[in-house]
Image 1 (cartoon, rainbow, N blue to C red):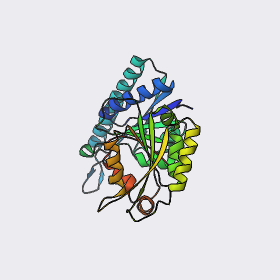
Image 2 (image 1 turned 180 degrees about the horizontal axis):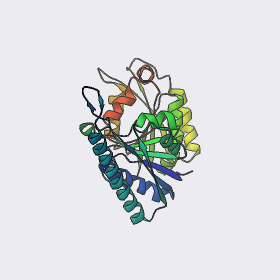
Image 3 (image 1 turned 45 degrees about the horizontal axis):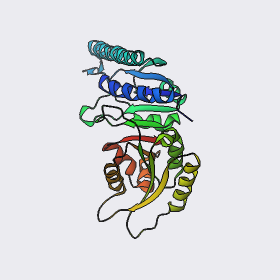
Image 4 (image 1 turned 90 degrees about the horizontal axis):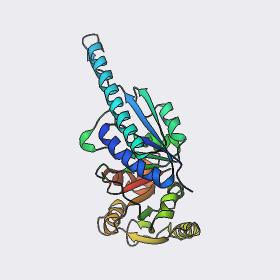
Length: 281
């Protein structure tokens, strides 16, 4: 099993440089076809008082900026793909509501893997990719690249955040191409305190055995929160201590469900990413 169609979501020139480098590296490894996907977004239009009608000059200026950025993103993408000698295509759509429009989601559904770059919180923009939309509406796994990473490297060490849920199971099997190529795979179940049992322990042992049958070097481990630590902090420490290249975890549709089942770990980890993260639901 390998990834044969990789859709790379390109939302701004800075992220395009990172995303295309990583996607190109994955495509070479898997012999994949790459799709560059971009939404040419028209930002919120200023209104003119007293009638609160759109300012035509502002509308044109916003359209010009969005189109110029789309041209630059396409240039960066094509230059990288052609320089690397990869099989690729470019898809661009105009949108007023961001990356949640049906044509973009439909394009994503044909992929084995979606690649996107984590938005830089210090550079918020209306054109930033909405990762949750792709996670919840496309039905495809999303590989999220931390904006602090600039150079692709082989995925040698993988950590699977395991809680026994169907989302965690889907993420695990969606990550199989990475898992089979890795030198080591740790499946980690975190309990909220040292006194709590691990309700996912039995399923964790079973998933480790299932992965081993696929030729994955997998082992199951448990850990507990101590003091005031949270599951996300335990996982973050594990990522750093074990020099993890890829975190694999499930995502949940509603924030209240994330909080109830996984203690808000998904959102917290995405806000402080240090390793590539493969998410699925």
